[in-house]
Amino acid sequence: MRKSFKESFIKNLILVSTLIILPSLISCSRSGNDEISMVNSRAIYGEDNREDISSKTLPKYLKWSKAVAGQIPAYRLRERRYGFKFSSYDENLCLEEKFSKQRTLPNCSGFLVAPDLLVTAGHCVNSETCPNSRWIFDYHIESKQYENEILDEKNVYACKSVIISKEGTLDYALIELDRKVGNRTPLVFRKKGKVSSRGKLVVIGHPSGLPLKITNGGKVIDNYSKNVFTTNLDTFNGNSGSPVFNESTGKVEGILVSGNTDYEQDPSGCRKTIKYDEYSGWERVTRISVLLELIKEEKKIRDLEDIKEIARYRIKKINKKIYNLSKKRKALRQDIDQYFTLTEESEELIFQIDKLEEDINTMEERALVTRGPIKRSRLRKKIKPFKDKKSDLGIELHNMRVTMDKTFQKWELESGDIHGLKIIRKKINIEIGELKRKVEAFQRDVLD
Image 1 (cartoon, one colour):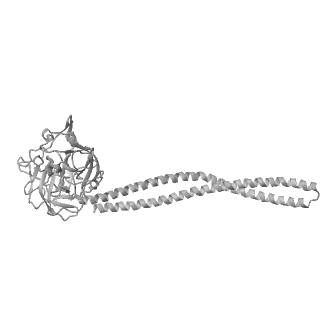
Image 2 (cartoon, helix red, strand yellow):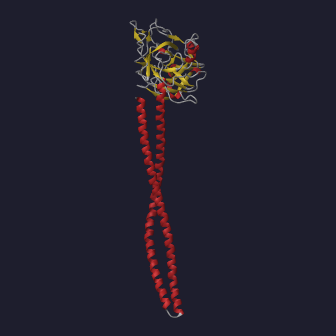
């Protein structure tokens, strides 16, 4: 099957993580035995150009093929001392069909874009199927793996996580393997523009689950679409996720996605290949250059989502602070009640002080007009307690006012903090709303 790819860059391979949204126009489903089946398969155009990857293959093709893997369900593997014993499945091909006697195993293809990042089709793997997905390298007819039906454990990798996977109008997947793949060079791909309409194409993968095959001599049939182009490469169900190369540059131009029906039923009950006219091909290939742009949009969306999460976290902290301040303010209400009580008491004190002041003034006036030092001395002695009382009341009033001022300032401060925090919370909520609208806009752009 085909479709495919991801978004995370590994160190200097920023390009790698740019692959993400593989449009694919195929419809797929799971059959009862867990093999991936497609309504729109691949087929033969003119002569069947599929060839085995072997020691006779051109060196550049061999180099490319080292980065191409096949996907198999984990249940098909049984762990042994020196590797994994596998069980192949029967495609029920007619005996005269090319490669009819070869053992079939992978149900999808994929290719490395970084030491532990692999691109394939979205309908091949998702977050639910990832744990049971295994990816194998070097499954070709000259390998001991094929001959002995034992896969070398160093060539078997598990799907660690799906970085991104989508199906439908846009179909792609980029996955992280459980460890880095050694002694293999990730493939180079086109970063912008389109493949030349006169360009010659090559595809490498596992058609119909067969050992690794290369098909060359492909031509570009329709090159007008922004997202995909069509070709007459001979591909089959199982080629989903295969890299389509530019013969002259060696760069990946796209990911094989869908195509014409592969087989038809023979009267004898076996299946035979359907052959089409050389120029009636519509094997769809998603442009890698388009994926680079799509992943940039995907990254923007994820960045915005991260910002939203940070904003929500800030609001959570602010709400907690408001709650704590509100509790403190509630406790302050008792002080405020005391404040008003003190206010009433202070007014009473002021009245008493004023009354004492009048009494003292009256007594001093009497002392001035009283004859005789003894009488004046007695009057002044009577005045002293009044003055002492007035002084004590003055000190009490001063302390009361200091307490009142502190209580009121504390109340105003706490109230001001709460008001300020509510304003900040309101602004952050507005920011979250704007971010949400931006995310929705980016998502619409990506899907259009």
